[in-house]
Image (cartoon, rainbow, N blue to C red; front, side):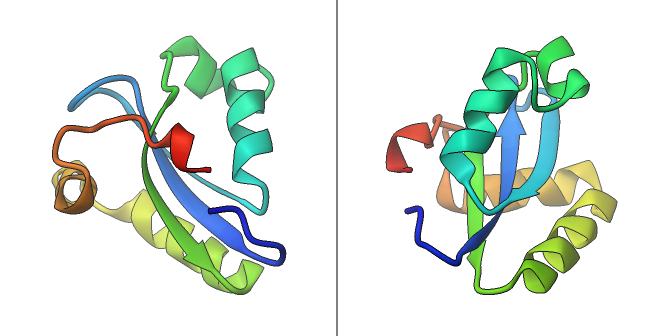
Length: 97
């Protein structure tokens, strides 16, 4: 999934319908490692939000940042519907990166 020059908006969850976190990065694997080690986000580490449940790829950082901001303002129900459109069981998709 990781392509040189790509930018990603991702959603992490603590569990099925659990706590949700939206982030943006240009290196998804490295960012997940940071989160899981407690160095990526205090929120993620505090609430154990480690399950990668949704990823979107963009060509430019501007597009990715705009999408991240959009998703952060979405209602929780909208985010849940987005996740469940392609990942109804909220499986961890870390193995795809």
